[in-house]
Length: 186
Image 1 (cartoon, one colour):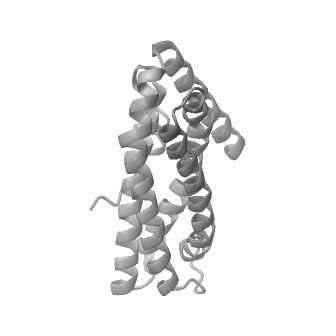
Image 2: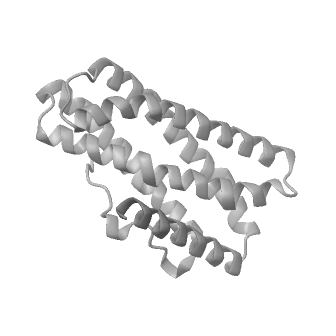
């Protein structure tokens, strides 16, 4: 189980400028963050809220509060609208389901993140049973969501979007992330 996420300097890199490279990398980072979340719950059960657990909680919060949200925004801006234009009924149904997943993931994350933020900050009011149950639900939905995107929607989008469109998508995504980082640090 890999408890380390990609370094901040590696985030947002898009080899060849293809926006799908960034989307794929975010899925890999999300799967690692979910592994970290599961390892965190196991660690809390065995060792309690030690320094390692607090650092793991902070790492998970950073990923799902920034990178994962940006990823969903990227899909809503670049992938879903292009597929909905001229989509067949099955593709449209799948996209609508993924859009609903984004809402559910955000709702689940809002509840889970409060406990993780408290844990990361060294507060004692977080609840292990809630974290365990919430992490299980959030992880299951996230895994299912990623699998559906990668098996159905991304191949369809890759087939429809040509090189120039994919590079423009990558440039826009990278520029938006740079602006968001500058805003957070400034």
